[in-house]
Image (tube, rainbow, N blue to C red; front, side, top):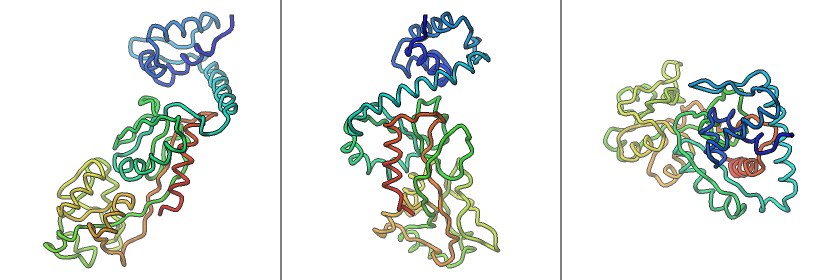
Length: 296
């Protein structure tokens, strides 16, 4: 008896999510149903694909070999189904997107109306994590990552580069005075990041060394840092996508524009390494890239 698509989907979902329970949630099935599908598959193949322990599931050597073939079959099927659709407007399904809260609020949300109008059958789920997550564990289709990328298991597409600004509110500067030289920052109230330490290194030099802020107040995400700056708490350094509207409206003032070491933060869309990227995910990534291609 030949393996079925349902059994292959159950097997790959278990591997990707790390457990039968999580695979069941991903496939919107019961855990017992997914478990039976795996058992049927192993029985048909007469091999053990996954070793079960009390803590985790581990691929056997045979399981690893079969996984590659199973993925290829499922990817080919998905590609064939996509090719039969009359147009991109017919594409449907759910895309789970993950990004830091500020990028969701200031970049993705303003683009959603246009995307949904262009692809009316695609559903979007926006999730916010200010730390790097495991895409498989969180069942995420695409994540937005900032800076250099280190995970070789992921594909990435550069969406844009966003420059950094050192900013303060007019109210803060009226009370404390405007710093003229980088060394003046040592006498000011600074706002920074509590968890992503490299963001506390600002694009300006003191004695030919990059200035690393010692913030009096810290926050875990850029939106909170921005709000603190708007309240006149102190001086901070943030990416353009967070502060451009504030700069245009005069709510924040850019400092050291004649001294700043121009630095551009790379922003990528990343997704799990696979031969065939679902068309709905590809359309979403291409949409973002097109909208942000001139964003610097």
